[in-house]
Structures are given as C-alpha cells and as structure tokens.
Image 1 (cartoon, rainbow, N blue to C red):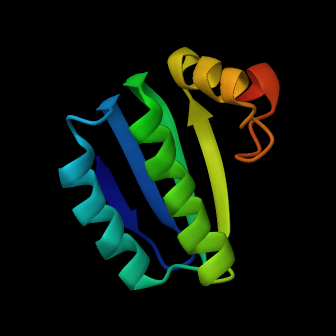
Image 2 (image 1 turned 90 degrees about the vertical axis):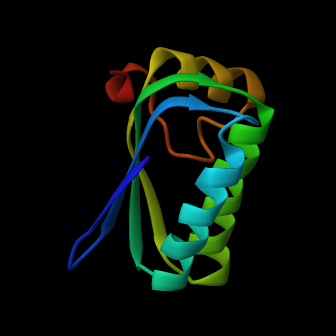
Image 3 (image 1 turned 30 degrees about the vertical axis):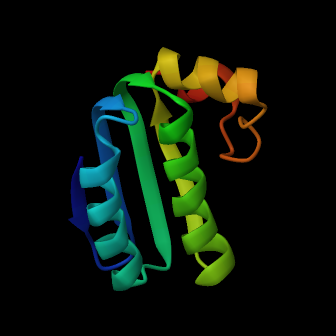
Length: 105
C-alpha cells in the first residue's frame, strides 16, 4: 500500500493481496491515515489481485472512519476485476460507489 497526502485529498493505493496475511501491516498504515483526518480519501484498488473477507472488513473500517466518524468523503478511483467481483457478490458496489465497468481497470 502506498499513500500520497495531498492538500485536498489523500490517495491510498492498494496493490497485491488484501487479505488476512497482509492485514496487520495495513491496519497500522490505516491508523496513520485516519489520525491525519483527511476530509477526502481516494482509494485506488485497481492493482489488487486478491481480496478476502478480512480485506473487505478493512475497507469498511476505512469507510466508517472517514465518512461516519470524521464526516469526510470516501471515493473509489479504480477497482480491479477481482475487487469488483467481491464487491458485487457482497452487495458493496453501491456502498463504495462503484459504478459498473466505468471503474474497472
């Protein structure tokens, strides 16, 4: 995961696997992002090869922290086919404002 802190938004680029094996390291970085309290967070999930239920939970926690606790905005800039499939199966395409093929990488 890489993070770019900009003046108007924070870009979070996930890559590789977003799963239970990578969760510990990702949680630490997410805590730093939430502590920064950005008003807009943009997630780029276009390079995620695999996502499991724990990865979905992490994304929901990011959304909860940004949108509900900080009153910010969460945007999804891109999703890989693997992420799109999991979001679709879990009914999360509307939760993360994924609009069909327009966001597929």
